[in-house]
Amino acid sequence: MKDPNQPDKDALIFNIQRFCLHDGPGIRTTLFFKGCPLHCAWCQNPESIDPKPEMAFIAERCRGCFQCADACEADAIIRSEEKRIDHSRCTACGRCAEVCPSGGLTLVGRRWTVDTLVAEVLKDRDFFVDSGGGITLSGGEPMLQGRFLEVFLPAVKEHGIHVNLETCGCYQWEQIEPLLPFLDLIYFDLKHMDPTTHRHHTGVDNGRILDNFARLTRGAGTLVPRMPIVPGINDTEANVADTARFLLHHGHDTIHGLPYHGLGADKLRWINSPLRPLNLTSMDAEACRPVGRMFAKRGINAVIYD
Ligand code: SF4
Ligand code: SF4
Image (cartoon, rainbow, N blue to C red; front, top):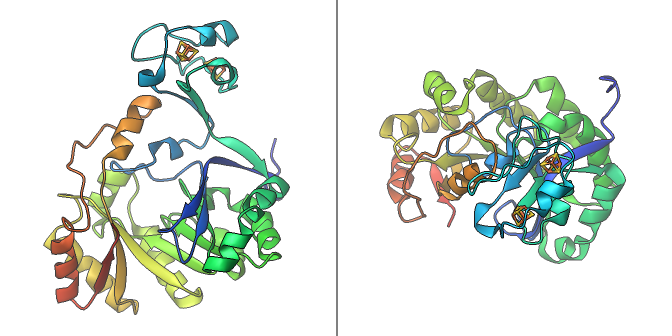
């Protein structure tokens, strides 16, 4: 059993993506931490939400050989075309994925110790130096594994690596406060300004999130507000006006906009997710221009990503 007074020795990470250009300055290596206190209906990484390892099944890749069934000691393999895993039995041991010849099964989430993760990110140090880049903590919500970050961040900062935190903002202030000296940049998501609508689409209201935003603005180095732009949900005149008012009140005149895309909807079929696809049309920078104009009218520069 974990001692709550001790930092965590390892972290659960479901992806490490190299050569990222949108997660902060320069070339970056982005670490995707597993587990999130929100479950946004539009989540582009729904495999990040569950804070435990889980098996994903991609039916299109399956050859129907059923080597997975022979490997599974938990009797958790289902012989149907659409489903392969009985999640009520699966222990996420990963044996089926090891024998699957086609990549139809993947274990989502692997544990990394501080030493192995530092060694992994140092492989890209030359790119960081040449481009002014670094690492980005993403997810999921990295702050759910803050007790690991308390040890990991001082270790990477010893190597002079720039650190950006991408966050949904939903945690207790006491969790992020000790980490602030090790964070060079924070990308902070504002998803919706109305507490009831925010709860409806993400599972939690936005009180703590807005409070943390205000405190970080006062106390942290560089905070960049971001907003996933989801058609019909938060791209309305009313929500943009409320967001702009909130930003100006806290001394911000810029927001980064991330156009909604539907890639996360495919992933919902691969895992045992309670989320249902939104069936919305994916957006791009052009489709988000009206949102940019609404912000501009209110004195906010919206930087919309491609
Ligand atoms: S081992 Fe892989 S390819 Fe074979 S049945 Fe299982 S999921 Fe499909
Ligand atoms: S992860 Fe382990 S328990 Fe789960 S289906 Fe695969 S072999 Fe069985």
